[in-house]
Image (cartoon, rainbow, N blue to C red; front, side, top):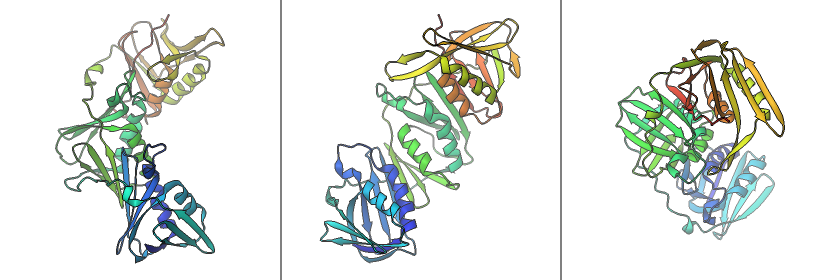
Length: 380
């Protein structure tokens, strides 16, 4: 295998491939990048079993003198290409055991892994795609993936559920303590489906789509989903199991609603939660700050916390509108509230209440299809 390529073109594709490299793996071969030079194209592939990425380089700067295959140590290979400043780089194999990298006056040799040990990646057949704007997909990821579970106790909750029915795409994520739901009306018709995508795969996809503003095509298989954009195949496994029916958790109407300026509410919650006590959710091994929101008889809103070891904090905040006929005192995680508020793009948000032991629903009139839900915490 002998080829020459523009360094910037190669680095751009390696940065994309890096999303599929594992942090830890029981299969050392997967720490490598599979390289195949054909008569006219260069293929780069990475995989961590859950996620596989492949790019096809057909750039005019690519000159292939000899075909071949190799698996190079991924991290070291990317680091070398990132650091060299040569415009053109030449690669060649020495006895199929060492990759020689020549960049201007620099010369680097990497010991190869056996490409015969690299698992065969079966990418989904590119037929019958669902095509959506990348901005829409990134919006869905941003507004749901944070609410997925970090615990493997219930694996299905570690992913985002996508359900297409009558051209309405509903994305849902929950960790049993909070929920985020977003709905998108699709312009074109497509067969209904119900799948759950691992949150880690969506996180990497979101990073990979940074700066890409065109449409992206989705291709489906029984247990896999492939995203195709530019010269990239980005494939993830799907989670097994039936996602819980969360639609019944969201009320049709709310007896109490408070309207807030979002930034004012965010800043007040951030300040108060500095002194809040922490409770542990044992199955997630995560701490979260507990705050209290209270509607006074005079209709003012107080956000407070009490910490026996450190001190107390409370703030009065003036809502932009208050549709409530009774007093209310409710506790919840400030982190969950802040996560929900930060994924909403509107300037004004609404907090809906059905009682002190019922979930809090956060929404905005600007984004009526986006709904956030938080379970309350029992107050002393």
